[in-house]
Image 1 (cartoon, one colour):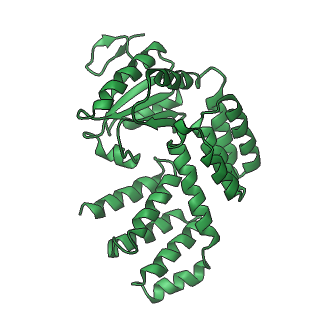
Image 2 (tube, helix red, strand yellow):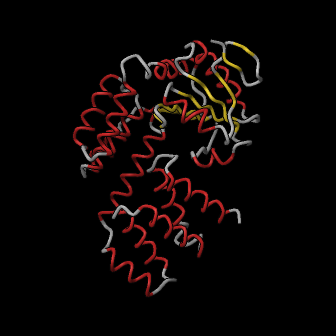
Image 3 (cartoon, helix red, strand yellow):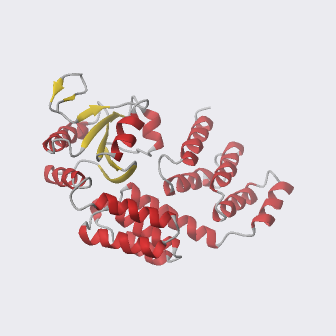
Length: 300
């Protein structure tokens, strides 16, 4: 079947432009049926003009097994901010509603082809996408040991899977094996070392180490109530809230610190907020709400 291209022409293309209003439908929703590659680019970006056509050619060669969405970061700054796009070109791959792989910067044509072919296989060949989804479900249910076994099995089939590497590291975190999780990430293949899933796992490790040092929640809450202007007490309270699983409350306390003094302790509140955001899924309501509040303070 012929698809409409970005200009509305009936050409045999599986690539389209998207916007903030269409992102959920074009990327997140569609990825539940077929893997979707998102190319974040801009008109002024030279490497983007080389990488984009290479990705398009590789995607079209798969004849619908994978789709591609192009997002101009200058025209869609909110999406770029929510997904922490710090440089371009940046490429994310979505499957089953979640980012599962990605890379930054220009890569060779051969690497582009391998990247697209691997994603095209998620929907049918080998069932790795279903296996990752199953492992994530086990981890969410608290079955960290079983999840780790599934993630390890996926890595046996696909050694460069950022989703499996990050998932296995998070399973170790859930089991309290922080050193093993950190060692695993330190040995991740170079091509995925900066992938969102790897950074998310690193953030969870950092937060887990902080949790081990968190003080009693009730005592820290009392300290903040007694001295609302004591930002160190409020910061400690935020860490304890996160350690207790009260993530949104922790974000609110850190936002309050930023509101009172954004430069306090060399911007520690903002840094901690980004660590929490990185540890969660990009579309998590806590992340979306927290980023909106932080942005409104920064640009007020």
